[in-house]
Image (cartoon, rainbow, N blue to C red; front, side, top):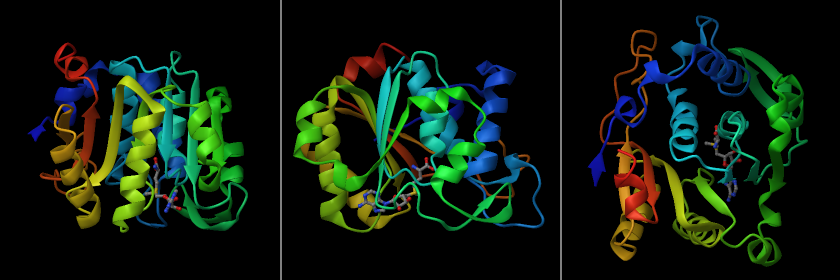
Amino acid sequence: METIKLNELYPYEKLEPSETEKLFEINKITKTRVDSKKTNIREHYGIEQSFVLYNVAKKYKCKNMVEIGTGRGTGSYSVSLLDHVKRVDTFDIIEHTKKVPMAVNFKSFYGSNKDLYNMIKYDEKSKINFKHINELNSVYLKNNENKFDMAFIDGNHTNYNIIMNDFKNCLKLTNDEGIIVFDDYGNFPVVTRVVNDIMEKYSDFKYIMVPFRGHYFKEWSKGEEEEGSGEVLCFKKKEIFSNNL
Ligand SMILES: C[S@@+](CC[C@H](N)C(=O)[O-])C[C@H]1O[C@@H](n2cnc3c(N)ncnc32)[C@H](O)[C@@H]1O
């Protein structure tokens, strides 16, 4: 599989300060872990993931995204910021209103995804539909077949059948020119195995790996620039990738 660096996918300098400021703010609320030594969001190794998703949606002018594995909503909030993105559907196994221990801006916080939603100050958040994974049923699949330009698979990381099923659902939900993004290729063995099997079976698609951790903000984060792992972008139509190099 071909690898391209995050800065080749989308140079950091090409992003407007207003765009990066919003992505930092979203990460500040939704991505940190408790850490009394850190104050600047750029110190959080891995916040580049939201930049990968934002850059893919921006570069390929996606109008919508479906995500499996909302987490605290970082990816969904990030992509929703784009004007041309009109709708984001995101699914998680944890209820939107369930309170759990988490962190906001490196400090301990006990709350729900709904509480985080209320802290996000960007109106674009209203484009996001937060759903429970049980709602991703045959009715949803039928009503939304071919509807999405982009899908992000970031739910279960250890069960082969669940991850493969997430892919099959995303295959149905995305259109012929759709882009399916997998998180954690190379650092989660089962995810890696699923993606390898998909690459073998669906060999007409184009696959690109984008290592991202430690790439944009290496002067801030102590982590190394990761290699051999990261996001895998699956282009259902090869030309969508090659025409936009
Ligand atoms: C790594 S987090 C997702 C991070 C998120 N995509 C982001 O942008 O920050 C993984 C999430 O997947 C959820 N999850 C685990 N198993 C799942 C499943 N079978 N279906 C949907 N979500 C699942 C977890 O509850 C967790 O919130």
